[in-house]
Image (cartoon, rainbow, N blue to C red; front, top):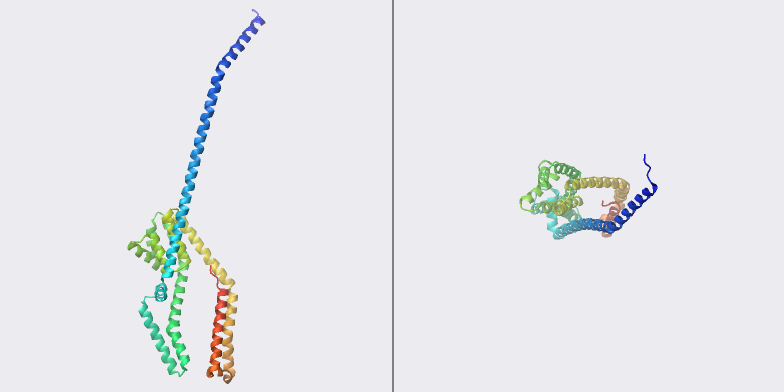
Length: 338
């Protein structure tokens, strides 16, 4: 074997290193230029990506602000309509609206005729009983003007209570119907045909309003005239928002149903907590009448002077006024709006 001269190896290595150095020196500028170009391209691409992301975020913010503004405008418009409906009703009109809210199938003239008839009957009974003129006039006034209106108010309250008991169940039915693919109009018609009164009657009025050419939000907003409840206003607001800004209506109705049930639970809790105060108020309010009855049973001559003497009439009148004020104050103290 022939040995390799170390000098030759050193020369070959030196030539290789020199060649690499020359090649690196020649290609260095080109490599650096390509690196800078690639870096600039990456920066431009990242800048374009950031710009697109910023633009998309800006578009989302603008869309959210538009929807928020649309919701606020719809709420203001609905509140304005309800305020106009409230201020538009006066004396006879409000009585007519209460007749509709009570569910009585009588007109306003028929109501006045019934009131006059009741007043005449009470007038005849008190006159034949030989009572005094003041008692006759007071009993006739209460029978003709107070008793019929109180009865209508009682029917309105009872009907609203039934409505609140059934309304969340109807909303649940509407939610399941919409989730199954039915449109809102068909869900409303389903409640109008298969629901329970008085919810069925109110939804039937919505369907009739739609047949007259009104939109669904306007028809639902009109329900507040015949059923003036906060729960109905919530329902009208949900439908108005869905009509203006869109969204998941089934989820909104489901949340509304849950809110109404929570409001009902809160009302029951407040009623239970205030029951002691109501019982105390009832006892305090009935105590003067009970004492007067017991005094009359034990010593009739001692208390009859209040009913036979003019000064006794004045005392009874002042006492009645102060008793009424006290009862109203206690009523406002123990009644809470939820």
